[in-house]
Structure formats: structure tokens, C-alpha cells
Amino acid sequence: MILGRIPVNLDPPVTNMMYLYPLILILVIISAPPATAQSDQPKQAKKLSHPDNLIPLPEPPELPKELADPPPLPPDIQPDPELETQVTIIKRGEDTIEEHRINGELMMIKVIPRIGPPYYLKKNISRGHTHAGDAGIDVSPPMWQFLKF
Image 1 (cartoon, rainbow, N blue to C red):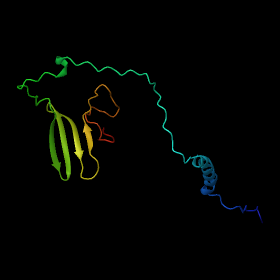
Image 2 (cartoon, one colour):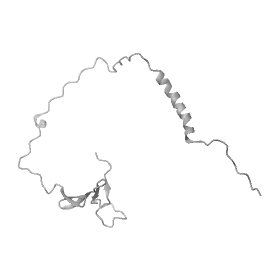
Image 3 (cartoon, one colour):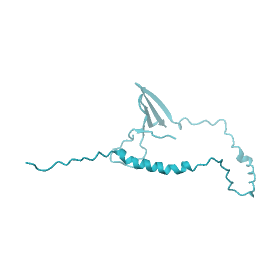
Image 4 (cartoon, helix red, strand yellow):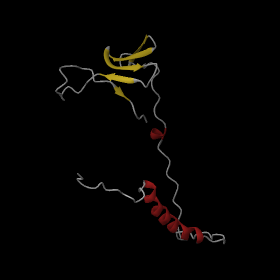
């Protein structure tokens, strides 16, 4: 008992390259006129677009002496070491860990693994913004630096 016929496609298969042939032909036709329109004659210099009757600008005035040089700092002023970031470098195996502290409070940890880019663990200082997953944790998830400028 025969239920039906199996359809047979006798046409050649259509490939993706067959769609590119008309596109290539169009690109060749479009690029041919500019290539043939080039001249062998030397180009003439373009005429300047500004008029001939311009007046030069006057020289800027000199700065007053009090603005010319900033006053020197007193020699007895030294930077406060408490205000500077204190960096502690710890070696664990082949990894390097840098702890950055300000006024003794841990603000950031930079982990430099042997393989791969360094990543940062920063203290979460946005206490007003709460998350469902915060649960009182002051450290954010690891962050990688993609662009630096």
C-alpha cells in the first residue's frame, strides 16, 4: 500500500556564496566610475577661504606679579602621614595582596594572582543604598578593571 510520494528536489542546492555574487557585481560597478575619472593633470592649489583684509590680534597683556608666580610654601610644612593611604603588601604563595587603609580603616584590597588580571575588593561606602543581598556586608563582590585612563 502506497501512502504518498516522497518529494524529490532536483534543483542544485543554494549556498550562501550565491547571494554574494550580485553584491560583488554591484560593488564593482559602483567603484569603477571614480577610478576611471582620475586625471593625470596636477591639482591646483585651493584658494584660501579667508579675506585679504584681516587685522592681526594684539599681544595679550602681561600678568600682574601677584598672579605670575605662586607664593612659595613654608619649609616647615610636611604632609600628614595619617591622611595618606597606607598600603600593606602580603605575599601568599604566588599571589600578591595589597591592603589599602585610610586612618587605619581597610578601604580596598587588590589581589594580583600569578595568572590573570588583578581584581579589587572595595569597601561598600554607599550605606544609604540597600540591596536584598547586602545583609550588612561592607565588602563588595570582586571587581575587574576593564579600562583605565
